[in-house]
Length: 478
Image (cartoon, rainbow, N blue to C red; front, side, top):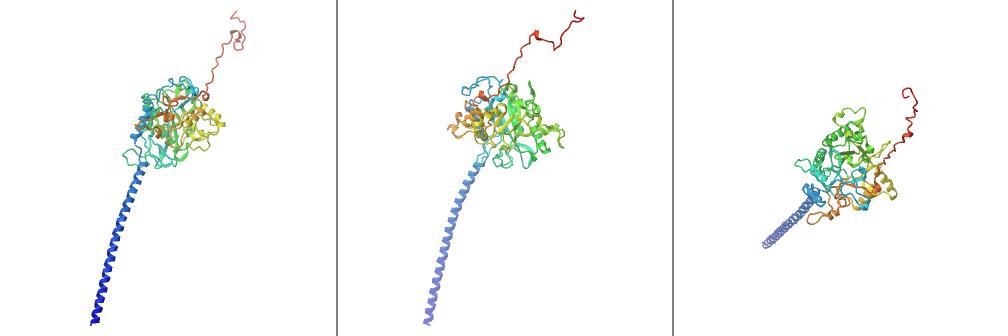
């Protein structure tokens, strides 16, 4: 009996001990779970904060550039240039530069003898593309054209392409090195981050209005139709010709100003292509000169492809010269080397092409620029303007006529704390180059010389043989 009671007590005590141990384990497990939950929550918050910071940074890098800020940059540039009233002065004023053997002269210098300020991408406020990160900008055609004209631009590059879902509609684009569109919508339309493109017609309207308002001050304007692609790639095929007809339609606002004829003759259909730039600049007042990198002779075919009617547009009619490349395989899209006896009046190459020319070839290249209107263009629209060494090499050593630039780009070292711009830190806008003019005479050694006119002396009357016939006495003159 006693033994049984003792056993019961032992068993009872043992059960109590087990229960206590079990409760202790449960409590410890619950505490650990709470700790893990707190730690997990803290880690989650940290990760969320990191994600928010990363997304915000990414958005900051890829969001559209604020057009207001770009306009403010343009206004600051205009102020730094002297209020924007000097960028389009007539070249009769202040053309001398003793360091470059230049002298005061009139507009009667051949057009090819001038360096001219150019806009790299018509209608685009920027910014340009950077190599290491995305940098999206905005098309604002009227504002961009108006400001570019005031800053002195007289060459406008139209980067013409199409979107994959609308291959028949020509638009202006800003693409990076991989071909990605680098602009986003500045409108309320839900057309996505890669659907913002520029309108050719809005740009041509703005240029036409600028001419009407006298912003070009009687100087010529040069439009470069730089095609990046053509539907199906054939400039003589129906799709290519139809695409070019739509481009023609969007240039209609400029038709009244596009060079048709002057005292030298008719210029339509490239009829005076080789002589185009060899005439005095004064011959092209208030005129628009049209250049392109593609073959437009498909419009002159005796039999046009089915469905193509000239009354729907003839781009060749308003083109004055085709632009060629000096390289068989140019980094510039659709720029080809002249072939089969073709004679170029205009050439385009990259800036790198000109800056890497061997010294013993400089003379050869300067001979080309002496008779052919040449320009150096970047394959993409970039955040940059040429430095002094590049300007000196291309303009004053080789004689390249134009280096189209990102008109509204301001390097960091040119920005002052009060928002002003130190114009001397942007070489192309400095006094030596285009601060107070749009056209700048090239150094004398790099200029084209007009053929001298020889005046034939009046022959001695005694030497007149009357065309070889000897007059004899006749009954009529006895």
